[in-house]
Amino acid sequence: MAIIGGRAHTIEQIHEVGKLGYPFAEISLKVPEAVERELNELLRLKQTYGLYYLAHYPNEGNPADTEALRQRFLPLMKRLFELSAALGIEKGTLHFWMDGRWITHDLVSRKIELLSEMTGAAGRQGVVLCLENLSERSDTFREAFEAIPELRMTLDIGHGQLLARKNTSFEFIENCLPRIAHLHVHDNLGGNSVKDDLHLPLGEGIVDYPKIFTLLRRKGYKETVTMELPPAAMPATHEKILKYLEPPS
Figure 1: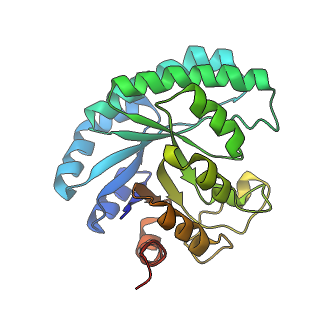
Figure 2: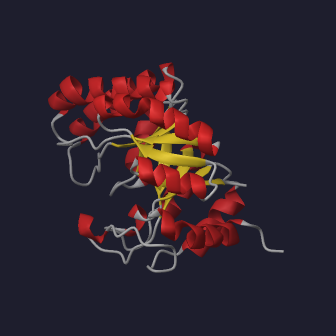
């Protein structure tokens, strides 16, 4: 059975996720200095609620500026991997946009090289790095997976509904399942821009979660699932996930 937890953007939300009894919280690790200041409190909350953490790393900035990514983003990520290890984090999610429909193949290749360096640095700290889909299709991710054996994927099912006629989760599940190590779950009404990424509770949008989760169940998915919602909305969505992922009686 998949392991279901909640997204926590702040210390207060970690409290809320912990009080709801979920086994893990996916926390934001963005600025090393801020993480260092909160390190003792984060460790205390782990013990208080008996939970563990997954990491959600910062956005990359300008996705086409590979020089800035190498000079600034790569060192930032290496420090965050070290802090992840201090928190006992074994899995983290990264946005690293490289949609081959909108950028050159040369840029995709250079970004895969950087991604390989980050995946190696994460692995040395005991962290499995998971690349999250934004607008990409599975062919670009397959290229990265072929180049980086240790790289895994966070399938964001809500993102799969954007800029797509059919939710791209279906093609990722069919083509990349062995690399999918984590799921992000939230709903939306479709659309073509960042503002359409509404992060609604399941059932309040048009994402076909019954079919997507049925496919995942049939394929034997048993990894982690994060509800990317405010904590107050998590219990109802949790019930739906369990309903969709459990085999019919």
